[in-house]
Length: 351
Image (tube, rainbow, N blue to C red; front, top):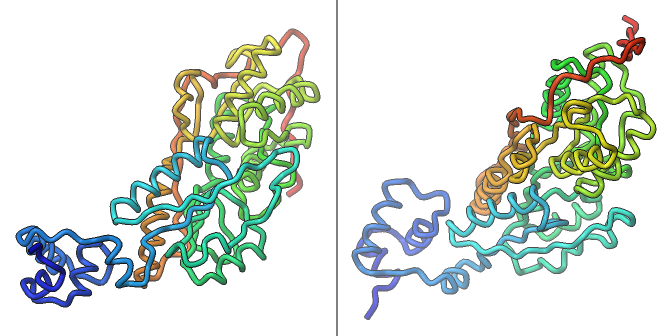
C-alpha cells in the first residue's frame, strides 16, 4: 500500500499537521523540520492529495483574483506573476473579471457573494473600489491584498507613482523641454490612492520645481489604452500646439500618442518627445522611452503576502516598488525655435 500522511509523521517524528504544513510550504514550520519531512515523504513515496488536504483544513486552496481587465499589459503581467507564485504553493486562482466601458464607466459593483466559501484570500488588481465594496469584501473574513491601488487600510503592493512621474518629467526637463503635457487616466478617477492621480501630481510637482506652472490645457485623459492615447493627443495638440514633450501615465497611452503624432505629420522625437510608464513588451519595437516596472514581481509579492496572512502572519501595510528609466529613441531635445519665436517662460512663484 502507498504510504499515508500518518506514516510520514511517524517516520519524521512530527504531527500530521506539521507534515501537511511542511509539504504545502506554509509558515510556522522551521527549515530543518520542513527539509526532514520532505526527505521522509520522498523516501516513502508519499504524495499529498490536494483534495484531502483541503477537506482536512477546511480551506479551498484557492485565491480569488478580482481584475477589471486581463488583456492589458499591467493586469496580465500581475495576474501571471500572482498565479505562478500561488501555483508553486499548491493554490489555484478563481478569476473574477469584467470590462470597464470608458464612456460609461463600471457598469456594476463588485459582488462579494461570488467568492463566499470558494476562496481563502482575495487579490484585487488595479481596481479602485468604493468604500462600501471594500467593507463588503472585508465582511467575508478573508485576507485581502490590493495591487496597483489601495486605500481603506487594505494591504497594498504598488509603485512609487509620484516619484515615477517626477523622474519621467525631470528626464524631459533635463533634455530642455518646458512645454510638457501629461496624458492621465479617466477624468472621473479622483481617488487619493489612485496611480493616475499620484502620477498627475508628480508631473505637476516636477514642473513647478522647474519654475513652470502646468496649465489645465496641458493635461488630457487617455483612459489607459492605445486608442485613448491617440485620441487625447489630437485633443492636446489642438489646444496646445506648442507642446514639445508628452509624459503618458502608461506605455499603451504613450504608444497611442506616438500614433496620434504621426497622424498629424509630427516626428518623434524631432518635433515632440514621448515617455511612458510600464516597460511594455512592445515598447522596444517603437523605441519608447519608459519608466519600467516589474508588474509580474508585484503580482508574486501580493500572492506571497496573502498566503502569509492566511498562515497567520502580519503583513506590512504596503510594499512599494521603484521604477527604472529606460531611455530609447522617443525622447530627445526640443526642436529649435523658429526665428522670432519665444518659448514659454518659467513662472516665478511667490516665496
